[in-house]
Image (cartoon, rainbow, N blue to C red; front, side, top):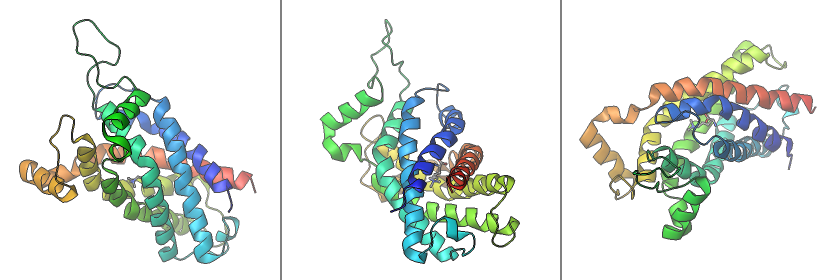
Length: 265
Ligand SMILES: C[N+](C)(C)CCCC[C@H](N)C(=O)O
């Protein structure tokens, strides 16, 4: 199994994340709150996404990454490979994402201050350990189902958008220019996040359930009760910030990914 794509995905995911982190946190409080934890986790997750995507295409089309410019895969194959990568990365992402959401929604200061209540979670490791102690492995995968539904089709859309835009601006058989990769990667991120936002809202609510928010009977119950109480607009919460973040993060992710693979030959 070719491994370069896993390594390139690892590095490019980390680079994209550094750019996106302030956007990620601005929805809430504290700008660079907890940067090292997301870097480490997104690197792993992005490596799974790109590695599985490329290897799925290898299985579907019998072409390696290097051969795919001369023999481009069909959009159906790109979509199926993207969904496969998305599905598997969602499972790796689930516990990390849960911890991120729990920590970002925690407004009490982490360090104990006189007079203020002690924070529930002292950091990512403490957060993971307390969830595990209270609810076991299942607890760490709270909201994983919603995350999988969010990521499987939208990562298919992600790679189709990227490939489609690259092909629009690149003569047949050639590699896309850096400018094309940046723009195609940026728009792939935006398209995918626009499609993912409704389920992203639901996913985060399910991950918070059991803490401050009420517990839901399941995904459908969470959707229906959120829409009843807050109107349909609730499904578009965070759309602008998600899109603003998606452009630079994914432009840099794709540019570094393509650059690394090209330089490794
Ligand atoms: C599928 N969905 C749009 C949710 C995520 C797309 C992932 C791409 C990148 N790691 C990022 O954080 O933007």
